[in-house]
Image 1: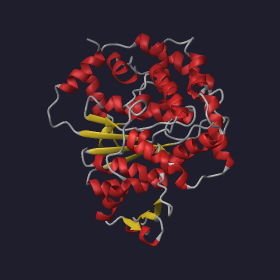
Image 2: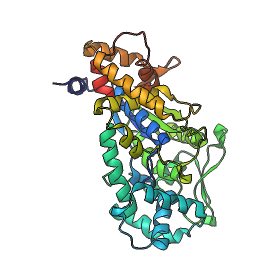
Image 3: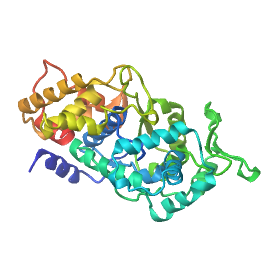
Image 4: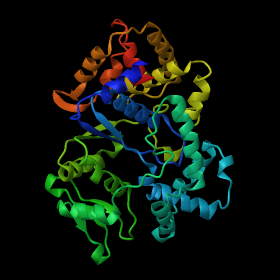
Length: 391
């Protein structure tokens, strides 16, 4: 039995009173290749999940179905059908589809919401996915496998939110958190002004929901089923996630924690993937460059050492291929020198890494755990820890 199997067996045998943690990272829409910023969030989420699972029951919720109705995705699909036409997307690369997405975002032309309604209906009723996004998800699933990333089903399965948009708005009304101007032909706002937060529109006057409305549909019923919710997100979304934290905590009555992550600059510049610029640094490019030179175990560990431990939660350090390569080499040395220390010591270590600045939390701090492997003069790493969390 491997140490990972031992960890899972330990969890299975734990008392029925184990705490329940909902891990809800920002979902990456299936519209472009995975960039270094995307990879940072994915590896961070992966380490939090694996390190917390021995201590609590973790639900990793990341479903593209939830966010497909947003303009970023459904609007892109409508644009493709209107401007590109009948194309065999299964023959296109992720770069080619990504360039179409950049063209869509650069064009600035937004179809009326009525043009997107058939897409929303197909998503909601049938779990339909446009062939362009189907192709990207297929490619992404293979990249997840090679990078050792878990797919909670969001890449391949239809995972709709439990609430309709109207039901989510009703929940907000019940918590006195909603300003609904639809009867007068206006938009819908989340109203947390009593907490000093500005009004935030979630549904436009024409009925178009934004990604915050989609997140509320998904998370409002889930927070009540868990003892703690962890939101991992792009630091640029701080105002919206501060609002989301307040809403979920008030409606669910359970602790909700935010883990903001800075984007990864490339050549000193932080840019959204909507502008392109991922050539040479996408997940596919990195795998093509490093997989032939580093074995799978070192590749998985080294990626986590770099994107979590070296880059950290901020956005100060630009992406460096040479530094990533150095950490892949370091990973192999760590694997070669790892020692068996016993699973009880691993549990003690993980338990001690819960909480931030004296605040008790259920989930493990991925940054503190990962940087603990980077010290040059510390004891050899635990083989059990590497296999259970970083393999």
